[in-house]
Image 1 (cartoon, one colour):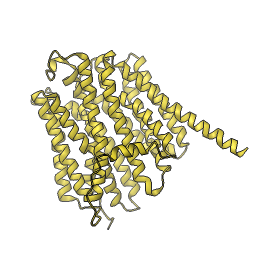
Image 2: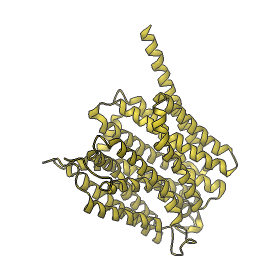
Image 3: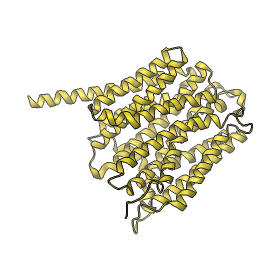
Image 4: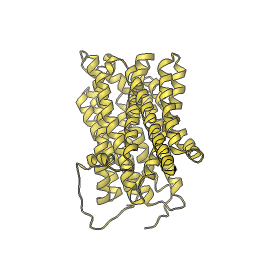
Length: 418
């Protein structure tokens, strides 16, 4: 199969990654307004604060839990029916998921919103398929460039998702804008991307006589395999604890800003965009330069400690500008720590296990993120500062675990030499 493909021909794939990066951030700026604030009228006015907080966590968490199952199942399906058909399923699923979410907001149906988030989450498994398709058609000469554009596409989605969510839901900009408009926008973007993919992209992976099998239990097996593999078991624990901390900050920082500074959806959207800018700087600039100069595990430890410190600074400082500066630095330090940790995972596996090990990291991230959001939603009525404290504990604990692991490895190696 020829690998002489232009960037233009890969545009639908990069747009898939952009939509995936945009998916979560698009909803965060408006969740506070429709679920937490009683005057929004989305939930019954007599809904308790405790129930509103739980609904908030559930709406975020269910997306990631469905992503956990969908990524594994759709990944397997792409090996059976090809990348293009699997991506078409993902994009059409995203279209219907976001469309249902928009309708749910209009008719004030929480459970229809949950159904829309479940469909959108399950079909958000397009990211690894799109990445595989790009690698399929990348020449050796342009592979590094294309992988860089993959990270850029996801980061840009992460930056612009909250901005779109804030701007498109503000009726003071255009009178017919509402909280449903960002969902219609995402649905339309997914549909346009499906058409671009259908007409402008050729299949990259064709395996003759491949039997179609859907393994509904495969996602659980992938997750459990992480803790059975001798080389990545300890790193899997570190990733699990790190995601516990990170998901508390990422999922509940908007709620914290609402309770602390009374932020509107628009203010929240630009705050999250600032975090996304930090991620873009980290992934696009810092990772490449730092990994050439420093030990990988030291970078992870320092990055996690710095992230925990910046979250702590957000909590203990009163001025709003400190929170804004901190979230930019959080995006930079966390993106470095996470990217380097994924590289360490990759280095523990053989060339034949690379797909599996990347599936493992995605599995841990999605399941832990989803369950943490639901759990914290149950207890966050104690105050939005609680998720921030849990974030500090999780991020610092993951750094300490890796430090202890590295120290023990150092002692063992010197004992053997002696």
